[in-house]
Every structure is written in C-alpha cells, then in structure tokens.
Amino acid sequence: MQNSDKDMDIRCGECEAEPAETGYDASRLEYLDGYIKDLIGEGRIWSGSYCIMKNGKIIADRAMGTLACEWCGNTYFKPDTLFEIQSVGKMFTAVAILKLLEEGKLYLDQPVKEWIPEFNTGEFAEITIAHLLTHTSGICALEGVLPRDERRWWEHMDERDPAGTWLKAVVDTGLHSHPGEKWIYSIVTYFILGEIISRASGIYAEDYIKEKIFIPCSMKDTHWRKDATRAQLERYNVANETDLAMVERCKSGGMEMMAAATYPTWKGIPETAGGQMSACREMLQFGEMILRDGIYKDTSVIGKKALSLLWTPLTGADVRNVSFGMDDPIIYGAGVPVYSASYDKEQELSEGTIYHEGAGTSVFLVDRKADMTAMFQTSFKHEFDWDARAVKGIATIIHSGIL
Image (cartoon, rainbow, N blue to C red; front, side, top):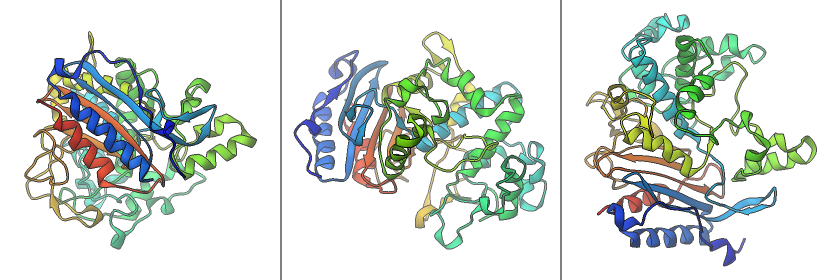
C-alpha cells in the first residue's frame, strides 16, 4: 500500500515545555520524526508514536502513520490512540509485588511453595519470588524463546477447569533449567506472580493493580481489554492481523468483540503478564511516579526503598541470557532489565536506565540520571515482526537528545 502525504503528517499533543528548557536537543526530535517516517515509507510499520517527559515536563507527544484499517471513523494514529502495551505491563505486576513487600506480606527470597502448594515438589520447591520476577526460575519459556526445548504448559491443563488445573499444569511441564541458573524469558511466571498478588492481598491481582497503581497515578485510560468502555474502544489502534480479525467479528457480534485479548487467556488465570491498553502520554504518569521515588503529584504510591529494587541487580554475575539463541550476560532488577553499556551493544542509553519492551511494538524507558521517561510504539505490519531499527534504534535516538 502506497503511503500518502497525509499518512506522514505529524499529529501532536500538547507539550509543557520547549525541549531546550529541559536540557534536550530539539533537533533530535526532528531527526526522530524523519526516521519514523522512513520506516513507514519502507512499509516496515503502520505507525509510530512517542512521548517524552524531561525534568517533569512533557517536551514531545507525537504520532504519525495509520491504523491497519479504518476503525470507528479513525484512520490515522493520534497521540491519544490506545494501543496494547503487551509485556510492558509486567512492570505493573512487579511494582504490585514490591508494594506487597513493603506491606510486609511477602519477601523476594520467599519460596513460591509458601503461596503455591503445587510448587512443593522437586526443584520447584527452590523457586523464589525473585526468580519469577527476574525470569530465572527455569519455568516454561514463551513460545519461540527456546525452540529446541519447546514446552506448552497449557496442554497439561484441563480447559474445562483452568482455574483449578493451570498451576499443576505448569509443574507437570517441568523446568528448562535449575532455578537461578539462566535467564529465560517467560510469560507464565508473571501469571504466577499475579496469583501470589491475589493470595497475598486478598483481592484479584488486576483489582489490586488498579487500586494501588492505576488510580493513584491517575491512569484513567489504562485498562485490560475486557474492561474497555465503548468510548475507549473507539480509540483503539487496529494494529495487525489479530485486530483485523476482531474487526470482522465486530460486524456480526458488535464492537465489544474488539475487547477480546490479543493472546489466549483462560478464566481464573490472572492477566498479569501484560496486555493492557494505554497511550504513550498516560504511561509517562507511571514513569513520573518512578522518577519521583514512588510519589505521583502529591500521592504516595510506593515507598522509595521498595521501588529502588526495580534497578537493583537481582541476577547473579554468572547468570546469562539464553533466550532466542543468545548467550549473553544480563543485569535484571525486580521485573526490568537494567541497561549497561558493557553488556548491551544493541542500543545506547544512559547507564542504569530501566526499560521494558512489549512484543517489539512498544517500549517504556525510565532514565533517573537524566530525569527522563519515554514511551514509544511502532505498529509492525505483521504482529510477529521485529525490527531493531524500530525498537533499539528509536530508543537510542531518544537518548541522543540529552544535553
């Protein structure tokens, strides 16, 4: 499909300061806009958007490109378009765990078996909450992460009773490695963390995250698709083949069909591995809370001490990332990678920056050294595509503007 000049228009949200006022080079934003336009023009992505906060002020909130098809009268991606943040949502789960830690309801070295009796067997008994947070438990990897040792835990589950059988199914699937030995990216470990949140707090994990994070950070539009209002549905990004199929189902089943999750979920299993819908600007409210040591505006969300575990290395020096055919060292805090130039040669960020990718289509960054937080998304033409230019390249360019 040929992109029109209109497709390349930059649609801007309101800013709070000029970049130069905050120590940021405005020319790098102009370069970034051209860079994203090139990716759209080459047919690599449908759209690109980003929002940057520096020194507590929004200095850029921009969007360009199109949705995969017209949706509710919307054709173009806008700054307030809602998109699925995918695994970036794992950070909400991590902060919820840290909140329960400071409430004295759990601790990071606590064996998971103390919350999940199914884990009281073999090497599963050695798995701790910290192992789950840092993807070092050895539990079933995301599909495609270890193609030579592919395991589908859900095939051991009784789908007639997912809530009663899914934890046993995880255990029956076995481990890829001894707990604490290797970094292997997993989704199901964050489902398990959600189950721990539910049991430790006494309410559903999703409700705990809403009450303790979304509400105090005034994140009014961040939600799971199942909770979408009609007004929110009308602002959704139609991004890929899965969304296009949902659009077709909407023709017969109504617009609420768009509220179905992108990935299969089962009733009774916490949706705490990501998948929330949000917008770039609203995600920066979460980032601002992190930059301000757990306080958003005048509201205390979490204590400084507990929050600091996000960027405190929790993986041992000998732990290596063996996901996707790699064999590299990694620094991981409580739920997020911690950037180090000595380990990460794919991008150039400030030392100690914490970040998380969401299926390659979205990235959230918090740079305490520069007092900057940023969120960007690049909607790939095909949902399982990945392009370093559209992920690592954009993160590097955003950081290159810091003066």
